[in-house]
Length: 177
Image (cartoon, rainbow, N blue to C red; front, side, top):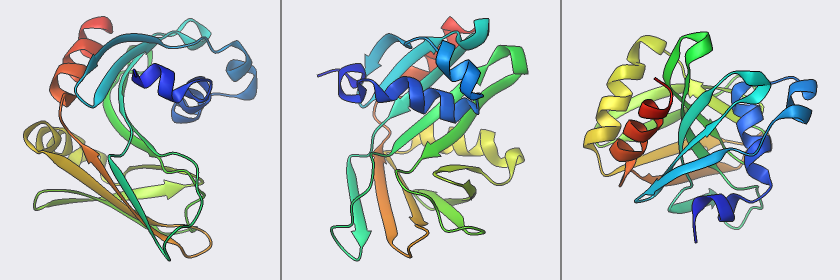
């Protein structure tokens, strides 16, 4: 089953949320095109509002909540490139619940740790100057673990496989030259 099928109709909404599009732009958002599936990562392109966007996307291989069994929407990790905004390899996360206000999430790849600021159900690297180091660690690592806390106090731990990430990023980069 491809990532596109497993994401179904939610993908345009997730893409729009990731790109912070207005509701008017969301209404015009097109279905992203799957450029290729590489291991656990898919490479996609879209042109919302006529502006090309390319991204790599993965779902967690495992998710845990504490207390156990708490319901939440699916989580997705994005690495986006938006040439019209001069944005390249922006790491972001849709976690599947509203984060607790004024709290950070953490991303861990091996021994490397990165703070992520949160807003609603999204998270982005807190120190943009570390984004290239994070991408490099992701390319070299085998998995990435993200920990966060919901507005209701539920702690979550999501583990994403990094298998296929380099190939998905290369394909997305090729598409958004």
